[in-house]
Image (tube, rainbow, N blue to C red; front, side, top):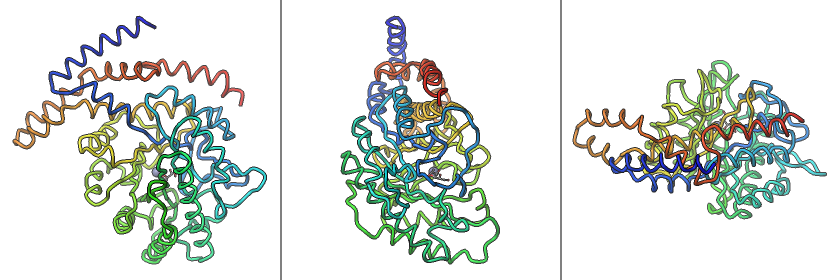
Length: 422
Ligand code: RNT
Ligand code: ZN
C-alpha cells in the first residue's frame, strides 16, 4: 500500500509540473473538486421502487430494465448500499430522495397528506452522515395519475390532489433544510403527455401554469428550500405532446424565479444540454442538472465519461458557474450491480469536472479572442492526453478512497456478503 502511494505521489509530482508549464495549478484544481457536492439519486438503488406500501408499479413514462439480484428492499438496505457507494467516491455528496421513499410507520398517509413525519428516519440518517438531502415530488406510480395526467388533468379533483402533494413536498424540503442546515432542492417533474397528436395543446398548459402557481404559492425561506421545474420533450406513451416542455418551463422559471432542471436525456437525441447552460444562466440565478446518458432515447444509462459529459463539465467550470449549478444524477440501470452503477456514474462526473478544471482555460480564451482558432484547436486536442489520471489517483488517495478499479473489489465483497443474501 505504501509503495502504491509512493508511486502515485511520484506520478502526481510529474503531472503537476506538466500542467504547471501550461499555467494550470493542479493543487488548486483538486481543492475546488473536493468542495463539489453531487446530489446522488436514491432511485438507482432500488429501480425507482420507493417504499410506499401500495404504490403502483413503475410506469408513467419511466422504465427500468434488468433484474440484477440484490436490489434494496427497505430504507435500511438502501442506506447501507449508499453508504458503501459513498465510501468509494471522493468528496462529500448529497442524497436525493423522492416522495415515494416515505416511511409510513403505523399510520399510512396518501401523497397529498405527507409531512416530515414520514421522513424522520431519513433526516436522522443524513444528520449522522453529515450530508444534505434533496427532494422530489413523486407524480408517477400512483392510482391518481389518471389517464397519464396529474397537474394538467382536466379533472379538478385530480389536479387538487397533486397540487396538495406538491405543497406537502415543499414543506418536507424545508424541514430537510432546517434539520440539516443545508438548503434542500425540491424538483418537480410530471409525466403528463399524450401518445398521439393532441387536439388541444393549450388547455393542459394553461392548467399547468395555474396548478404550479398553486403549488408554489406559499413562500418558503430559500435558505431552507428552493424549487426547480424539470422540462421534457417526450416520454414512453407521451411521444407526441408534453405540456411541460422546455419552452414552457423556461418561461415559468424565469417569470416565477424558480430553478430550471436540465436533464441530459430530455431533448432530441442529438441535442445536448451543455450549450443550454450559459444561455439559461443569462436569465436565471441558479439552475439544476440531471446528469444522465440517453442511448437513442431517454434511456437513463449509467453516466460514462463521454464527450457530452465533458462538455457539460466544461461549460460549468469554464463559465465560472460552479456556485450556480446544482449538480445531480439521474439514471437507473437494473442490469448491473446497483451500487457499482452509483459509483461509476458519480466518479465519472467528478472526473469530467476534474478534466475541465485542469484545462488551460485562460490561455484558450485568450487565443480565441485573438482569433487564433488554430491554436485553440491544437491545444484542446493536446490536453486530452495530459496526465489527468495521475491527478485523479492522487485525489483519491488524499480523499481516502480506493485508487483505480480497487473500489470494485469492495463492491464485489459487499455483493457476496450482503446483496446476494437478499
Ligand atoms: C423523468 C425525469 C425525472 C425522473 C426522476 C425519477 O424523465 O428525468 O427526473 O427520472 O424523478
Ligand atoms: Zn430527470
